[in-house]
View 1: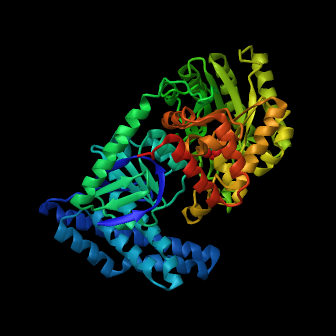
View 2: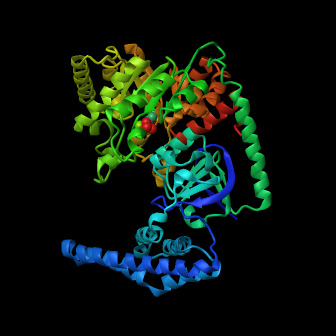
View 3: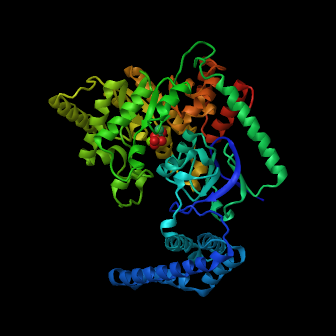
Length: 580
Ligand code: PEP
Ligand code: MG
């Protein structure tokens, strides 16, 4: 039995068989084969090793020609590793003795080697772990060839274990068969975590090398509420977690009774609880979950999940779907927020050193005006289908906002000329997710209809902590007094200019933060649909006066720890119990 602690990314408990995904999304099932198939598997292995060795040899020669012998040395290591007879022997032994497939046996041997390299003191060898991943991928590609299994058609419920998966992968999986996710890397607000919450699937991230600790096929427990994964649990542990699973089920069912109850504090203040969605189909489900509208539609998923840029028509259909699904309630469509960890196939292969600070989001759109205009046309055309609003992400200067608005005006003019109807007075707002935008919020508030605070990025940029990097995840804290002060500044600026202000980062859906956010003056919160009832429960158990007292107190603290401890105490006192 192995117990690992990671970061809780999506709540709930799952118990089931593990499926390990290779970094390229190969699904390598733990499957045994008949004795008659063994020779075929060995032939497959030999052919794959030979093809890989040849490939690497060619790469080495090309590297030596273009970049000199120093670079070619890296490929020499690959070549020697692949050609090593001991490697072939170890894999063949597993095939013959355990009747494993070549792919599975090779994966197991590589897991062992990676673990070995990781544990040596020699920094040179430690660094080679990455090369081993590369080698593994190359050889597996040859072994599996066309036999790569399709993740969209799983046949039994599994716990997905992987180094990392992209948001588009997560969305393409057959979610009816996914019990949970357990990832090597990631943080609480990484996009993979956001998608897991959206799907309502328990997830733990930042598990370091969970992919080397499991082999696939064995039973594991994923406790997404507390960030724990247990592989090969004993009977007693399984029983304990089954009880926890049951408690969580009861807790969730009880919360569901609040679905149609108003989101109002004990002293009668109403709060709008909106939904963050990633795919159009979610809009009507969000309304059923009790949402007052769509506070954030992340349109980039549309671009991530298809190999080609979606056409204007495809985008228009998607946006209409959301507007209709929201049944007349507000729908805030955020213009594409591509880049950083959300790279669309159409964005090419260019890699940046600091993608989070790079050409992402609105910056990318302003440089790719054709793409941006098509996108805006589709949104504007869909604006007649409901209460559609437009929101620009990742703004740090007033000029960017003005450029975006000027582009929107151009598109409106084009539509006018073509006689295509759209809502002329469509409200235009922006996200506040950079410290610059927060500090200049008074100026921005004069130019927009609404502001929406994106604390996922605002925390990342304020604290200089990559939100998806597990190595600095302990420093990522949306409750940092620095972030809270920026939130207060934005809310005040919005109030003074009489523009609407909401908060749509993950913080909005965390019951723990609910009271301080209300105390800071927020009355619109946008969150994963599944979080709405839990937040509603806090609202219905507190008063604005109490929330304001809490906000005043935390703003006097100067450390994250103090804030967190205090918020935990206050939360416990308000809801009178811990969440399951
Ligand atoms: C945010 O940054 O808080 C936000 C809501 O946007 P995203 O998580 O999509 O970056
Ligand atoms: Mg953001």
